[in-house]
Structure formats: C-alpha cells, structure tokens
Length: 161
Image 1 (cartoon, one colour):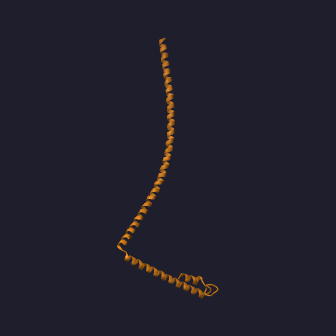
Image 2: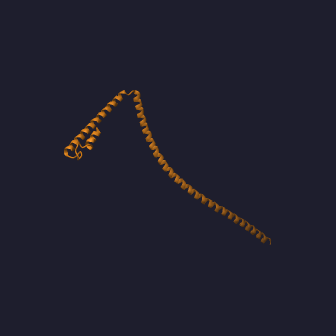
Image 3: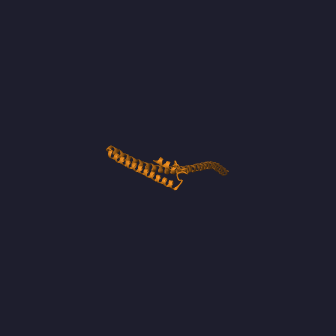
C-alpha cells in the first residue's frame, strides 16, 4: 500500500516531462490519491486494532485459573519490585548522607589528631622544663645545704672561740 503511494507521488510522472506537480490537475489528482492511500492505511490500522482486541478477549476467555494466578503473582512481584527499588533509592540517599557525614567526621578527626600532636609536643616541652627546674632546684638545695652546714660550722667555731 505504502509503496504504491510513494511511487505515485515521487515515482513515474505518467508520461509528463515536468514531474508530478507540473499542472493543477495532476497535483489535485496526486492529492486525491494520497488521501485515498491514507484512508486505506487508517482502515487497515483499525482492522488490526479490532483483530488484536478480539484476540485479547479470546485469550482472556481461554485463560485458566493457573494463568490468572500466575498473572496475579506477577503483578504482586512487580509491585514488590517497585517497593524494593524505592527502598533501595532511599537507602542510597542515606548512604550518600552518611558518607558526607563520615567525611566531615574524618576531617574533624584529622584536625583533632593534629591538635593532639601539638598538645603532646607542648606537654613534652613542659615536662622537659619541669625536669630542668627540678635539677636546678636540687642543685640550689644542695648549695643551700652546704651553705647552712658552713654557717653552722662557722657559728660553732665562733662560739668555740
């Protein structure tokens, strides 16, 4: 059907040398033929649709209860699949949010570890200063002990004389 319409419009010119649209009469005849071809195609499509509807109705009548059960189970499975897909989308969004939160926490952890290292370094410096002060204090205490023993010896000598 379609190839005939194509040939009439674009094919042979019917003996005319100037092509299918050379004058008004051939153009209107071509339009009429195209309209007829469109009507034929529409009728063919309608026949196919009605035949498909009749076949679907016949198939519905010939279905057994097992077929209907299988269809119901398939519908249930499709609904369940849709629910599972929705749940998976929700879980994926939660996973993305948790990954973002995890990145933030990782950054905070690295910052706190850096701060902890700085505090440990400061603590080590303070412990070193405290150890130096303790050594200095012991030296001063020993000197004071020596001076007090010298003072006591001098006092004893002064009293003795």
